[in-house]
Image (cartoon, rainbow, N blue to C red; front, top):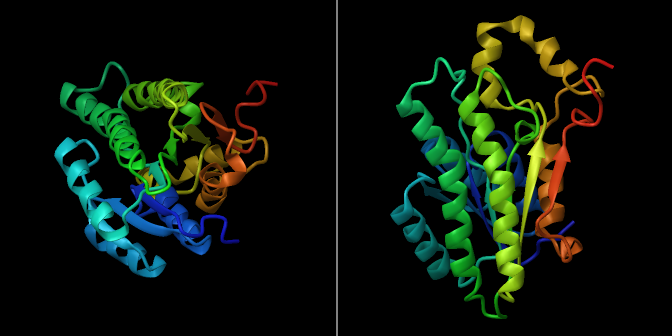
Length: 255
């Protein structure tokens, strides 16, 4: 424990699911946590539970990111970790999707991650001990195998995978001690799945069967990988992509 002692971490989408689990685990490891989300009530609850700070944030808003960084710098005088976790789904295939929905998924899932990286790098470069930090972008197994019923989500998660590598290479070649990695959960038991399961409870065994292990992942299991990527144990790890999917991508689904 306390692998993140003294570090300051922003977690977007930190009010629920993987974000909330990550906030709790980071706090348990000694980090000062900023929970950033549009869900003000839930976000404030998680911040209170972790002894952290809540900040309302639309990740697609450049000016809102600048305001968040100003608050973090005034309060802590440093930034060590940004977990770009906020994300939404469309539930629409390429034939069904409307342009407004497509644009919003792109804004949140891809532009939001880009802004988190850009503002994170700018702030981490000013850290008292010199540039340094970790950017962790939450992607998905949809970066490897598309979800036919969600064209926008699949496209954005694949793009996050490559954005991560571009950011990692840029930081390394620029001489910044700032690492960037993507984390790819499989089917995970989070609130983002609840509408689908409420509408079609028979899908629960299907979600469990997506993994050779026969179950969905738990948010805490994703958070455990995020702790590793944020810690000094991952000091030589950048530009990587880390599956936490119960083996979902390891074998052909029909064999």
